[in-house]
Image (cartoon, rainbow, N blue to C red):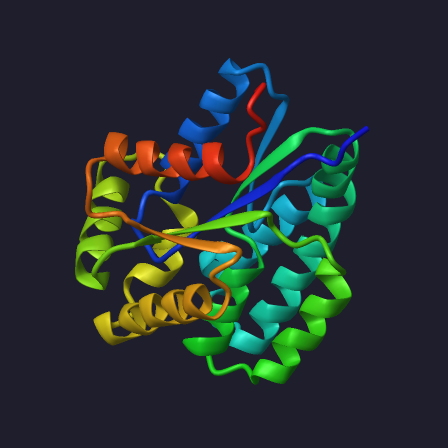
Length: 219
């Protein structure tokens, strides 16, 4: 059986990653493709517990190195229990955030040495690299405003965003720069998408890339 495809979505706060991941999964399923839609931090029972720990207000004072180690532990379990089994079964995996977020949030913006993050990534990811990563890009101020507006109208809030939204705009600008640096360094994997467009327009651009890069003529 052919290995499934692995697609990730990256970007700063309010870029629309969760929405676009969901829309893509729905469109792939409509074509008869079996899809696992997942997220980080999370995606397995243990990883979801780590997510709750990291995002809990009671543990908000942990530093970027501790975050890196926790995210890496969650990712290891997520890969072992969810991502790799799905890919080996021929299913496609669509993931809201993956290792690029650790590179950017804890590395570029958090100051964890690049060598530390790369060493952990080699151990944890161990070759399970996305076939395509969509970097949803928009000005940091616009993304932050979107995220704050979204959480104001949500009864459950956006926990991952909540823990970062009160950081200064300069922090979010570093995040944007970090994602764009990765996209520039790895153009064969990363596709930058203008996330200031309407969600439908973003989705169409993403779908065009999927058709061109991953779908066979018969699919």
